[in-house]
Length: 396
Image (cartoon, rainbow, N blue to C red; front, side):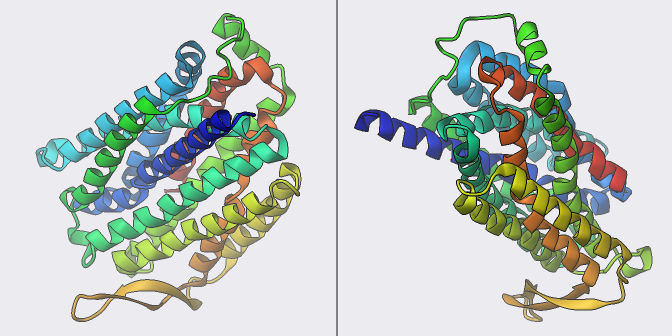
């Protein structure tokens, strides 16, 4: 490989990792926004999770079209379209803060749905590209774990950012208080669009013979491991998103309603710890990815995750433990300290270590050896990401 090609590959990898982070930033805005919506409009937990539902159900609608788009126009143009749609989606959510009380909730849900289109398209581009740039196999999984690490950084920051913005009484929080997050998201989308315009992105299918997309999708479905991987991703994304979302609702709900009655700033940082542990797990996965197979990683983390979830379900909510969080002092300042939370919350936070490597491992195993069917398979794969919208609503 020439130095020029090597540099181009590095730039492409950095760009894909950056897009991976954007996916997380917008996606993880839905859970804390659900708390604001629940209280501002006095709706149930299930309705409060509808923003998250809209974000992920868009995958079911856009999954197959995203695979078709990727096959027809390539990775770069698909990424550009995704970023533009993301800007529009966040913009619509921003407008919900300026809408009448009767319309605000509906406008926000439309924005979350449109933003979900963007996340689906970006996922369709980023995952197969990182897997391909890494050479597939263990190396491909390792590169996806690196991208996932940046994804976790953004996931850690988002609920903390929102928690700081609505510090104080969560019952009085409104969408307009979240505007700084939306400004940030729109600025990042705009910046990413112009970066993508000038970056060379490899096109693995550029020289491939063109075949009807329907035939390619049928071809992908002939691979048993791909079908199992798609089912696994449906369940996995539902767990990954549902655990912190439900945890946030439980922590902020008043004690008389069965919650923990914890301030929004503290709950935001408790949930942020879940995503931080996902970051730690993905960094570990990235360092070990070339040595330990995806199958071995998934087997171990799935077993450990089951144990932690069972402990969270059957432990008493009256048992309290101290977790390090950012707290608001009596004078209104913010400082690190320890907060008492139910032990169930601690077990759910630790689940983040287990979910950390699952996305990369499942995707890596599911698309192994698909060859020319990769782009079509990626679109089909994204359809099942809608589990991230369906399972949390059922939990709520």
